[in-house]
Amino acid sequence: MQRVFALVEAAGWPIWPLILASVIALAIIGERLWSLRAGIVMPPKLMPQVVQEYRQNGVSPQSMSRLAGGSPLGQVFAAGLKNVKSPASIVKEAIEEAGRSVAIDLERFLTTLGTIAAIAPLLGLFGTVIGMIEIFGSQTPQGSNPLVLAHGISIALYNTAFGLVVAVPSMIFYRHFRSKVDAMLVDMELQAIKLVEIVQGERQA
Image (cartoon, rainbow, N blue to C red; front, top):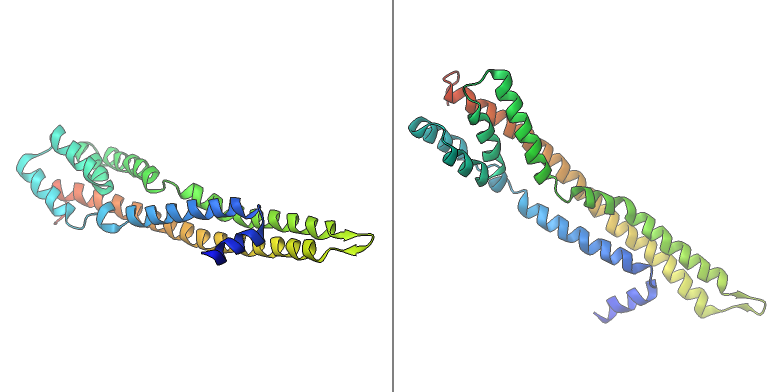
């Protein structure tokens, strides 16, 4: 712990915005890893359960409300089933609208994570500039002040390094989550279309 405090002290005050950005990034990454689990977003046994319940009880406001509130996939399923007796174009449009609504929830905080990935190197560069200012400030007519010179070099190097340490993982997870969300949305819409075709008798389960 003392070593961490020593590193922060060596990096100077410009390190604090980077530390704050790293804490926010870690919180978002942890929250998205938990929330985007396949079993929560797309329960694997949901389709056969929905087909069975539809054949037994049909479509009711209570069942659709319960289905939509259970999971993001259930929300897309509910949109399709509510329009199951409508033309195919209407059903497809309803499913796509539900998919867009679900996407907003699945992509929550990803813009913030992407922003942190983009600005972390700039914050590191800002710290580098501050360090360079201290380095130039160490120059006096009598010569350079070794302590001020060393402190300026520490600020410049530590902030540059820490900016990259924050930016690289943030960008990796941002890209990973965006790709995962896109794949899930496509899969959910395809499953919803398949569900509608099954309950309409056009396709086997």
